[in-house]
Image 1 (cartoon, rainbow, N blue to C red):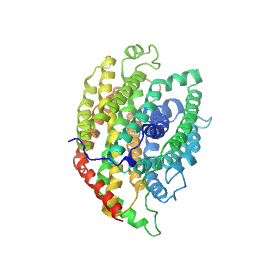
Image 2 (image 1 turned 90 degrees about the horizontal axis):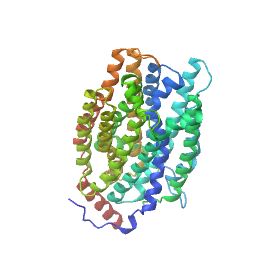
Image 3 (image 1 turned 60 degrees about the horizontal axis):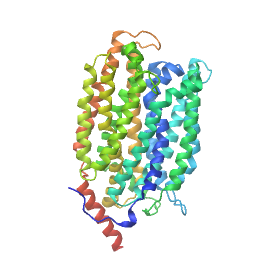
Image 4 (image 1 turned 120 degrees about the vertical axis):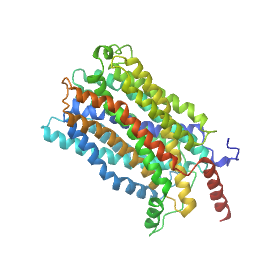
Length: 469
């Protein structure tokens, strides 16, 4: 049913502010997407460490996020609002430059021994994960205080995903081209210089997000001794846990395929068919076309479903999108390795359907923040959003680590003809593995209790409480 409830005009977020907020996820994804699309490949075939070492690193380093992400949520929630800036926006100003610096350094290849390179990779990867958390959790929590209205937060979340997908499009279409132009024959140099340019763009984008957004909702200041109350409110919140697992399985589905895609087109797909796609503005053959058209379709999906979500319940939409996407994923297994066009079209359809899921998910996290406030009186948007960051990074780690570990155990060696068992693993990770993750995410969403109708009731009751105080 369409939402006919009257919206408080003071809580309407202007178009230019939604655009400004979207720039923050554009900045984040200038690094998130290179890690997703090329991270494992970069570490094995460019940086020069083994696939098994990469898989182990990607998984083990994420264990720290179990502490790091909730801790950052607690810190963000307890930051005292600054006059004219607010509670969450200061983090964008403070950490934009460190984010860019650490991100660029993570893609630098030092002239070290194999052991030295491994240590460098671990240190810089952990550092990037931490700085991503430090700036991204307050950025995500910012959306919860930009408006009290769920419909305005929903709309802003879709703008956020437009920003994210735009960065993904830039990465998919041009990263390898920039690497080739800037590095020439030296791919390591090309990666570092490209990511240094992306770092400068991300810093500017974060500053613009801070400048263009507003914090309309003023949470109550945190009192001493409230930490245990907040932690209890979060960790006993069933919707929070359900959405954590939904997000984890969904991100894992994406990253398993993205993690193996560069290997798939280099070693599994027919090389003549792959090279035939090295045309026009698409450099890097079929893998660049795969990422490029997939990202275009994902962006179109975000735009299309941003209108549909106004009349269709978010929970129902998410369930259908992710379940159908999982079924489509299985088709990859049956496509001949010479039929690159069908592989790219299938990915485009998959991406069109999964593109909106992140926007829906982050809007749901802001709903959970309102739900917890309604149930317990606790304002803990930062802590709530830490689940989004944590589930994303665990999904990212699982996707990348599964790729590295399975290929490593099967005997993968960079720049060699791969045995049939390695090729078989590549095929399964393109098809059945993402399907399994999608189905698990859909099943978890069935248990999620906060549909749009319930959230409208909660929003009205919170407004009534505030007006009576």
